[in-house]
Length: 207
Image (cartoon, rainbow, N blue to C red; front, top):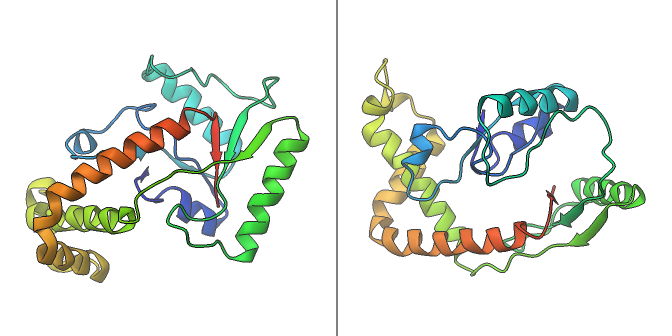
């Protein structure tokens, strides 16, 4: 699968699978993602176990290795290094997480801390308009698929078969497309803010 806004993590969370979104650029970037004005996509896998995910990353690294990132290697068990873990319990947009997933994340953070890792609350300061910008970007992608789907997917693409969410997002973008330049500028700035925070941690733990 690939993950831009949760497409690996969310299905895994509701289906009893393991879903890990890796750092962008760690794995081979598909051509479609390279063409995006703001690349939000990481390719990866949904697996039945952490062991399977670890094996996938080890094998993928043999095929392609991004020299700007530390190697993952073949993880077969607990490591000796203690990690810096950034904890984000609530949405970066300010929406609180409901009690059950909150308890699960906090319990995981405590377990990691008990194992000797450094866990601290992490925060990304984003402008209030971030959610609206991200929604417009998502809508833009849906619009491109609806408009140019035959070129992207030449084998039998039928725009009438798009799900209602994608059709609604495409309509949303058509009504607001004049905001595109400002939206892209803001998202690129937000991406830089993300990078500043993520560079402080080895892992970011969220619901």
